[in-house]
Length: 248
Image (cartoon, rainbow, N blue to C red):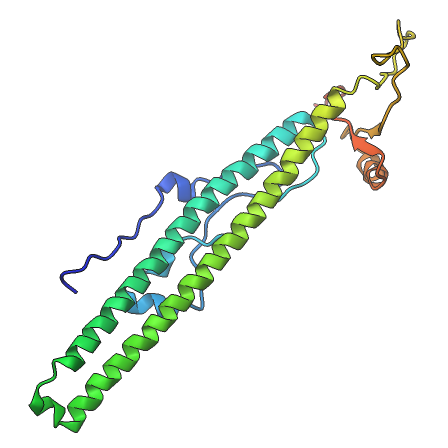
């Protein structure tokens, strides 16, 4: 194989592949061994499949009931996207290396066939041996090429899923900001408000949405909120810690 360089296989640093961003209620990012029925393609080229973790989505979007929960979730999803990108890059490098080795093997097999001496060409056993080598090399090349294409599809699919989860979290944070900035929302107070909110024309602001809050103090509050949120004119209003049950 002299005279032609083969791309090296790069791996993410230990903190990237084993460091697992945690998010309460959303699981843990913990890479696992590369699982593939493509192991037949990996072994002939000397690449250990267990050196590259699998691309799994561990953190998925869930409705947040507070600003802090929304921020934590968005951060966890963004970190997951970065980890998956690095894992995907390494997996594709492995596939590319396998393909390069397969191409070199085909070239060597063809070169051996072309440079056969007249004596070897007259030996049926030797001819069958060379032909078998070429056939096996071509088969491995096809396998490596197919596995690279499949790997690219897997990486694209998981990154698209990670982007979709991150987009849900981003839209949720946008919605929370709009709720907080809603000038038409009149907060219930013990004393009557000093003035009713009005628009630029001096007309009273009309509340566009109805809001519900999961205070997380037990009971069926979250269940009722879920029912309300099935309606298009309801939104989540972020909760705030206001009650703590002091227990010994």
